[in-house]
Amino acid sequence: MTHVDTTPQMTVPPQVDSPNSRSGHQPDGEDVRSGMKYWEDLAHAPVRRFGPLVFTGALLDHLLDLMGEKHPIHDDAEFASSVRQPGRIVPGGFIHSVTSGWTVRHGAPAAIIGMRSMHWTFVRPLPLDTEFYFTTESVGASAVDKRVGLVETVRKVMDADSKTYAIGRMSVVVLRRPHPARNAPPLQMATDLAPAAPPAPDLARGKDD
Image (cartoon, rainbow, N blue to C red; front, side, top):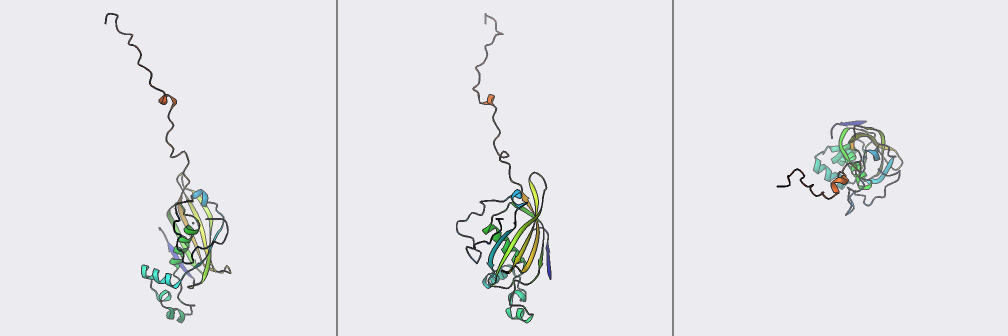
């Protein structure tokens, strides 16, 4: 069992997402800023299920070239077979990135402004060109102040039979929903809107002036 810990560096009711593309490309014209989720939306959100996804060999090759993580277990099919793997396997960090992106493309973006902690447990290798699913669940939340709150989530990556590939636990800092009146212009007093009164006569002057 492999563990990865990272420090400094989340959706819809339970349902299977209907993929527009197995490659995970975002549909043309989709505005990821619409439907922004805030701390209040995520704090007690139900379990959300996404998939199926397929991590293709072509995608793996592209990411390995980009990131440089060319360990033989990821880059060399012959080596992977020699250590009794079903073929090249997907790096754990890529599993996190792909599932995080999928929640935005097929769920909604969240007003995350920071990550407090992240921990992944990899139960068994994720092979290439194999359909998989994942769920994300909010398991804890606390308000920090009037502006931000913490949300703790668990992400479980599994096959079609719900057998686990990996489990990720994350704690993120999320903006709270802005109050409608917070950005409204200040109210103008009624006296400010009334026309100015004419000046009063100067009664202090003498009749000979």
